[in-house]
Length: 255
Image 1: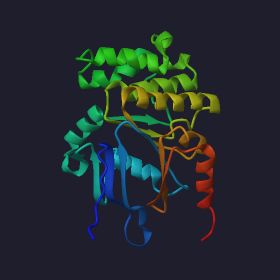
Image 2: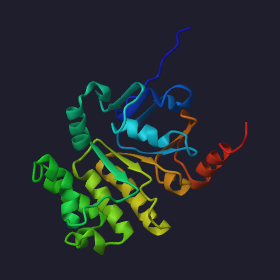
Image 3: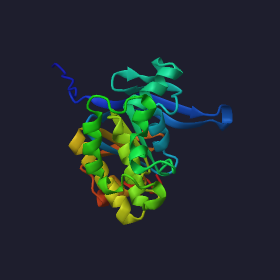
């Protein structure tokens, strides 16, 4: 009897293979990731969840090239990150990866428009082929056209995070990593930002990977991957807040 191996044809924007991350050494060492293999498909919104200390932020940081693995590999598209020197890794993060953090990290002296185009300015790309059309469409997606000349201090928290989202997508990256992007927002503003992330994925065929502890936030994703004790323990397609909450509660039951 012949065994057939089924492989997916969906390209991946980012992935890790047999990822291990150990902090410290000897008796004080902590194994934050313990052999994780996971892919983040192109054009999908994936949430990473797990109990505190499960390794979800470590996974995101290593997948994004912000931290290095102890062993295993991390890839953006077909590029294996450990094969890059510091300069090429910096260029890859600038040109192919976007970031949204819990803190908005906007430049207070710049306008909304200037904050959004900052990645292109730093790359010397502003006004490049396709960039102006992309930015124009992006501004409409995030709903900021009437705020372009305002500074961050003149915006609400939700509006500031929408600027940060637009900035993350401005350079047309392969993948945007979002670390607790609604952590500093009230539920209404958080819902607007999460809806925005979902719309941007659908309307631009970009990829978002989001770390969150909030089942309501995770329900905006196409899929949730669950970590526990540094290992991948489950994946959930088409999540709802109730299903995610039930799965998270299972982590709290003593074995």
